[in-house]
Amino acid sequence: ATADAKTAHGLIRGTERFSIIGVIDPVSCGKDAGEIVDGRFRNIPVFESIRTFLDHSRQKPDYCIIGVALSGGRLPEDWNDTLLEVLENRISIISTMHQLLSEKPLLREAARKNGVQIIDLRKPKPIDQLHFWSGDIFKVRAAKIAVLGMDCAIGKRTTARFITELCRPEGIRTEMIYTGQTGWLQGYKHGFIFDATLNDFVSGELEHAVVECDRQSSPDLILIEGQSGLRNPSGPCGSEIIVSANVKGVILQHAPFRKYFEDLEHLYCLLPDVKDEIELIRMYGAQTLAVTLNDEGGTRQELADVQQRLSQRLQLPVVCPLHEGMETLLPVIRLFISQHQR
Image (cartoon, rainbow, N blue to C red):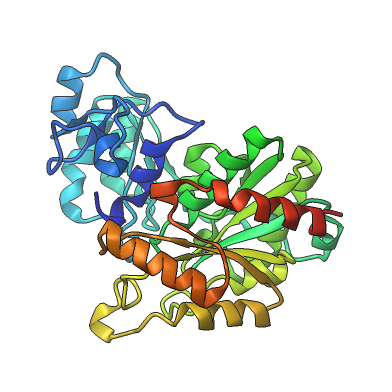
């Protein structure tokens, strides 16, 4: 239950592409994965090892998904034995690492020998499959909201999923543009993997995903999953989403108890003030509609106090998605759609 396991957390919370039947984690073995992630029992048992899983599970899986996002995108060498065990039991691997596991001779040969696959989700597309920005974004009919964050590993995709789940039963046809590997794993139809795309084509791939979504799915609302943070020095993402996708509305995910950018604590890289971030978003041409809070590092009472203070200071709705749901944002979203749908 760490930030590095955010891919696993997302799949545990829900996926339309796969059926999750177990999690391998020696630290939390014997528990239910849903209860670990957010206190909801989901009948997804956690096992100590692949061997334990195979001995006790009633189903044999088709795929083993690597559900961690490690800094630098490389798996430690001591994972090799576990991955070999997976392949030797004729289970394919889906990797979310930058390091291409299908190009490791030991694993590639094991996959070939056992007739299974190693699928690298972050393998860059060939140049002839990439799109350059064209301006077609200005023809998009649907209203667009970007779910951006003050930092990485802060809950942007989860908040976008919650908003999608809020809007659809209310008759608002909503689609999410995934920009990371977890969104694809969860089954969203439209998107691309931002950090596996050559820089010159990021804006074009983003535009293509939004335009394709508008034409094929005819939504009322398109949510765009943000990546990293506007001012994270190790990956300053977000301006492309606002500018290249012609976004006019932002929901900003904030971690009020986090002082430094993720994994940059040793460099004392301070997170900006949330009000300054909202001003920067305004200068890029978008309006911040609401702030959503990540509770990492604080108690429920501390979170409630921060929520009240921020709401008064920012004069915006401030919501704690994991604790109170997203219902209070529905009128804000409806108003935005009515003002920005073409």
